[in-house]
Length: 68
Image (tube, rainbow, N blue to C red):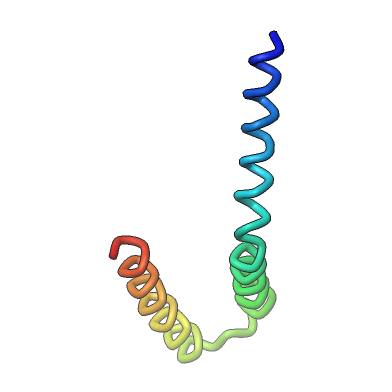
């Protein structure tokens, strides 16, 4: 019983560490999503296309970074 409790506590601590280490990353993802969604209705087609191009390029760069 004690061993299972220790394993559970270790898992919880690992999760806390995982999220705290990525706090800045998570914040930037939320900020980007909030910016886009807050202004989504007001975007003209030209700006929406430009943002789509930026996001496509960013996705490519992020993919390259993840799989390098």
